[in-house]
Length: 264
Image (cartoon, rainbow, N blue to C red; front, side, top):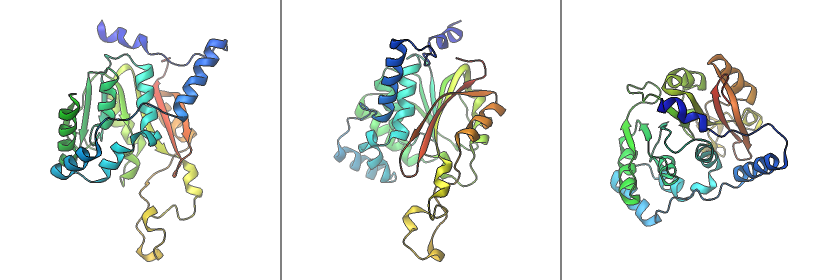
């Protein structure tokens, strides 16, 4: 009974055109353009020491310290905070340091789950949890071939990792994780836009653009999708698009929220 009623509280944008609805949609638009309030209050000195002690990759320090500037990360988390009840469960495969889940914890969410293949970043996450006084349920797993999948999740969150992995695909991601969702649960994720395919040298790693071509690595963005690509893929898996926004960045990314057909 409890799980069946939780998601009747999901607040999705109304289609009516009253002044109040227009104001609400305008505020949503502004919050997506300038996602304020997404900082984790962790001193840089602590981050550097924790990363060194856990031997986690140093880019996690910058990612946490500069989190509000990473709109492709903040917008999906903001959508979850604005549209899901606080007792909904959230699962983030590829959670890294757990910064996104920790931010959701400060918004009042308590059923927060995450997995990552890298034990060093899970160690960093444990240090962050202790420092911030928040607890997450995290474990080590390969998110592309997981051995452990939670059930009845209100949201599956995926940002800034899937399109970096050779051989990964959004199609396979949906197939793996759709069974984890509550019947009214949502996928919330970002992808690199197909517009990046028109950027010169997009087939090469951005750090190598100034090197001779024979010394360049393949692009770190292994797949790019249009809005129609995502909509078609979602439909094949029984989902439809609930929210969408494009982010003007380099590379351009798009953020999506999907729900099952008939939801909304």
